[in-house]
Length: 546
Image 1: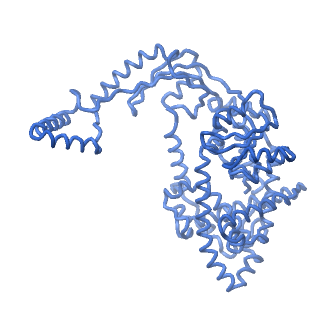
Image 2: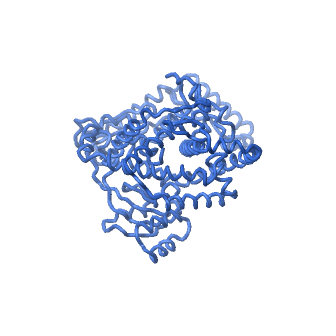
Image 3: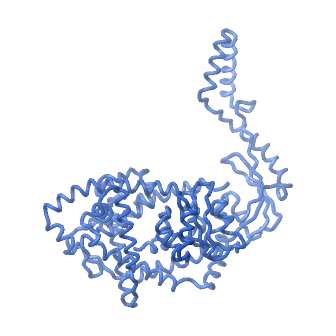
């Protein structure tokens, strides 16, 4: 499966902005993760490669069989061990790059034997990655067949040259030979020559998939119809809010539980006696206590109820003025609103000037809300090419200006110099960037009303210290429209891939794939991927704006 297919078959229920926030706000974390994964793969690869090179050198027949005989068959086509390993390592590395943060939660040892570590009740991690590799092969064979029947062609010369250059540069950075690095990434029998056909096949498939996606892009009528059926997911709200926190006691009051009151009194008496007997010693004890940790007082239910009652009175009073004095919340969508008052705000009968008080018992507080308006945000987004660097960005821009100074040459500049691995291969292109999603200085430049296609700038952001070399491409559709287009296109392309892949069978006459012999998981089985997704969803929910 190509990178575009992976991207387009993801769930698209989030706003488009989420993708750019993740790329921009967590860029340093991503870069560190990539370096860590490279070190892990290098460590694994060097150990394994050394052993395998000796083994392969001792038994040349193994290499011949791996490169010439069928490992499995997919859709009637023979797949060698080299080709299978290529797809296996592609899906494994992609998976670990996307989910590696959560794998340690479940005890996965990336340097250990994946065939002995359980992915689920029935599958090992090796089984799972082999299953993904076969699915990738099926998609590849299906798309290439469609491309061939359509007479589709694509010259991969330049793109493949850049691929080879990137491999050589990465090998040099890792301090290993190109051959060793290729084996680390794509399997023990891989060489640049042996995988060349598979790499270029993926490039052709990628371009063909892009063409099909463009042809199947939803119409304006389809987008509008989908919006009308799902207005709550795309409308924005403006409202005002005041939060009233209950003032809970930090020490026992007359409403405290009797045992707590007695204990508090005994503590006070003991302290008073100690101070009388030895004032200096008591002072030293007090100082020591001040420097240590003390257990926070837990109010009784009666004390909490009294504090909440007082907070409710304050909230009721605030309701009369919240429409004028409340903190304004603008362009807020449903996914960002606290579930306690989400339904009230999105009630179809809600009208400007409506107010309410909502109790939050879990956090001992009240929300006071005033509704202002509900609308579809038509603010256009922008497309921009960005080169991220910690070097002299202005010097790079001047170098570009002294040359052809075209968008195509800027793409090449990004591919060569950008430290953003997520977009460098696509010429630094960010599509559908929303206002407020970039650091302030970049946002101000990008959404300046005088901005025109072809404008450039080199801006150093004080927020992250990076220099951004920018090329303005132009405006794009509003966020809601881009989100719906991606959702509909994802559904369409998923159905398309299922249709063209139907009937493609996998034959494993030599019994190389263990997962094919394992019974389908029962509905009660929960795999680690599902658990990781649950963990991630929980962490995301915890960071919601209250």
